[in-house]
Structures are given as C-alpha cells and as structure tokens.
Length: 505
Ligand SMILES: [Ca+2]
Ligand SMILES: [Ca+2]
Ligand SMILES: [Ca+2]
Image (cartoon, rainbow, N blue to C red):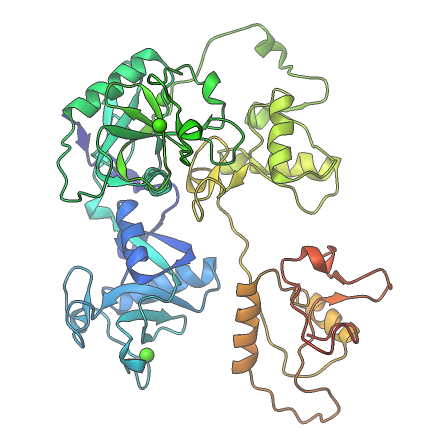
C-alpha cells in the first residue's frame, strides 16, 4: 500500500515545473511546444494535471498575468471544445462554457469552414474557435486541493510503488505505447523508462511485471515484452536513457539469440525485456507495456574516498564550492554530440548545469570570468524523443533548469534605413529580427500582415521589411547575432531578385 498524506499541501508544492498562484490556489505550467488540442489535453493528463480553462474571470486574469510575465505567445488552446456535440461548447470535464468563462471575441465563435471546434484564448483575454488540428501552446493546471502526495516516492503520483531494496520507485504501464511514446510518458511523469542496473533490479522488474494487470482493450500491441530505457537509435551502439553504454549499466543479460534485429534484417533499435527479464531488441514503433523508474533523492552520500577532502578532479577543472562540482570550459566549439563525447572522454560524466537554480549564479560567474563566449551548448536535447527535452542523463528539463528565452517582436511602422533601424532596435534593448526557422518566418509574415503600414512619410520602399542580416563588410551574409546567414536556420531568398542589396527580405 502506498502511504501518502497531503503534507505537500502545506508546502504548496506539486512539481518543480509548475508555478503556484496564490489567488487561485492552483499550479500552472506553460507548455511552449505547440500541440493539437487533443495532444494538449493528453499531455496535461500525463503530467498528472488538467488542460487549463479559466473557471471564472478572476482566474482568467491571474493566468493572463502569469502568461504575459513568462512567454510572449499570442494564443493558447484551452480545455474547452464542442467536439462532443457540435455547437455545444463545454469544458473537458463537461461544464457548459456559460458556467465558467465565455468572453468570446466579436463575431466568435464563427465555426469557420464548418471546421472550428476547439477554443483558443487570445492574449487580450477573448475567446475564438479554431480548428482542433492547429497547434498552439497551452497551459496545464493542478489545483492545490487535488494534490495527493506519495510520501515514499516523494512525488505527486500515487501510481508509483516504492521498492526498498532499490530505494526507488517504479510504475508498470498497462496501456501499451511504442518506445518513443513510452519514453515521453515516463518523462512527463518526471521519471524515465526503467534501466536495469543489477540482477536484483531485473528480478524486481520481473516480479512487478508478473503482478501487473496485463489485459487491455487495445489488441494492437506486442505481448510478452516490456519496453525498457535503452536503445541504439543513433546507431552508435546500445546505450541507456541515462546516458551510459548498456555494457556499463550493470545488467546485460540478453535473451538467447538477441539482439537479432540486424540478423533478421528488421529495424530493431529500441530496448525491451521479455517477462523473464532477458533483454530483447524491438522495433521502435511496436507498442508494448513499459515500466517507468523514479529516483527518490538520496540522503547525503557520506562515503569518503580521500580525494573528496582535497577537492581535486583534474588539473584543468576548476572547483566551485557552491555546487561542489568541477567545471572546465571547452573553448574549441564542437557539435552537440561531439561535446557530449568529449566530456565523457575526460571522465566528466555530465556536462550539464546545476540542479539547484540558486547556485547557477556561481556558474555564470565562472563562465564570464574565464571566457567571453555568448553561447554554450549544454547537456539537454530532444534527440531521443522529439519535443521531449531532457538532460543527457534522462532527467526532464523541468526538473533541472528550463528558463527558455522569451522572444518578443515589435513591428516598426515608421520607416528608417538599415543602420538607423539597427540603432532603434538596439536602443530598445533588442535587435533587428533574425529569422531562425520556417516557423519564425511565418510568424513575422503574419506580424507584417497585421501591422499598420500607412505612414505620412512617402520616402520609403514599400513591400519589404528590414531584418537583421547584412553583407556590409563584403565578407558574406551574416546576421546581427554574429553568425553566418547560412547557419541561421532560414535562408529562403526571394526568387529572381537573388541577393540584390543588403537587408532586403
Ligand atoms: Ca473562429
Ligand atoms: Ca535502475
Ligand atoms: Ca529482438
């Protein structure tokens, strides 16, 4: 039996990546990667929360303030739709929209193209109906009153069961997913696809599997196997989701004849075990049961191996007291993968940033004192599962450091020439916009379309918008952010008029 209390309610804590708002006694998280309405709903559920919709004007106000402080999106999906019965707008938990918040914008809902069933909240506080397959950011919400704390696992999820021998928690998922999906599900639960590190842990997972309910209405899955946290997706050998080689994980008992993907000419790049605990390679799009593993923060490790007193790792690494760690600035730029490998080669297990936000300052100081780079790669990516940002040792980004840059734009309706415009942006503590992706290009196009473009000044070139790239030194096109245009992520020149003059978009 899981023991839990509502102890965390006193501390007003749900998850590290959720912010508590006193006025509404609830926790909120802005999900910045746009998703369809249905995926947004599912994502919130996976995180143990609910797809946000304003319960009243007071909550709408509080959340709009939180939204504006954190991220400059114009629209978010909210948990209201008429998917259940056309024309009947209701919340995901079945309340009529009129009972919660129904401030529609003028002319909305208009069911454009007879295809608008999902509701968007605009930054100015009004509602629109939109096609559900559009992708928008969204907010997940958890009310303080509904937080139930799993004391042993130290998390707000009662489904995780503590195992004393392993000093950690596990959850067997009886709903089959394929490997990338299972990976994302564990991540959303602040956990990771289980990695077996010993014979004893293998035996525990076998027992867990034997006891778990394995009936499912979904027949489209592979029975007899359980997905685990190892893979060969980058074709660089079998590695665990914790960032180590499988052969170093402490458990490498493959089933007879496994891995056999290569031999059989089948693309089996993802990891699983048979119910008896023996490892098996499996196709990444095959659905199966899976187990998530959750580490409970351990007590201070008081082992003493001598060197710890001396606080020495390598001559080229500097010790920072506040984080009790050694750091080395690698000044030769490398690709992300090479950087990861380089750190491993130097015996530095992690190139990442401190888990304690307060202590980050010390690191920034080390960086600024030593080397004046503007950007460094850090050990976080979504390479294992698209859209799931996690550390190289498999921690959800929300558990460590997820301060994403907010990007704001301002369309200037008063024409200036390029050097003047550059100076104007600079004076506004900004820079002439640089397009780094197709999505950003589309956003600027939309911004331009909506912007007022009348001006009393007739002496200007219409039809173009100045951007932050140039070839003023005749050394090739570069951005005002100091990189080559060709490295900026967006290089779609207009046809015919190929590079004619600088800064023409
Ligand atoms: Ca509409
Ligand atoms: Ca483990
Ligand atoms: Ca196999």
